[in-house]
Length: 185
Figure (cartoon, helix red, strand yellow):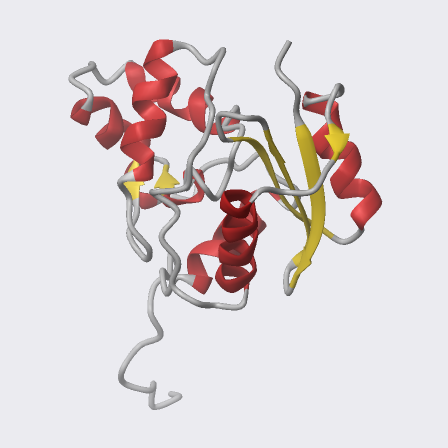
């Protein structure tokens, strides 16, 4: 059986959790307001994990997460992850999502098309995003519903958190303010 270790750490957005094994990062928990709630959410899906001292690669990912939530442009595409146990199609979806760079978005349907699947596969993409074990590292927040709508987000705070993360990257989903002011009559 693979041994999983984890670390709970603080960012400017709250407390995050990260779990890893000898292959790579296996879980990432987006911020909550307390270390206890983050730990509970992380362990809900990885109950056998134990607190541990992260190796250098995991510490680099922790540092990158802290910089991300401080507003710095960060690329997580090279962070080593372990998706063992994931469906092969989900692994393809996750690989496609990892190619979405800082400040960019795509849709569930666009990822399905990119993978050569029909429009019905957009639901599979949505399910993969909802079950993403390493949110942020696989940037599911950058995948939107049809028409560029926010869609769902299963992390703490739901779609509000998704919107805030996108805004952190300079992505505005609301219409811009009018350039010209109304005359008021």
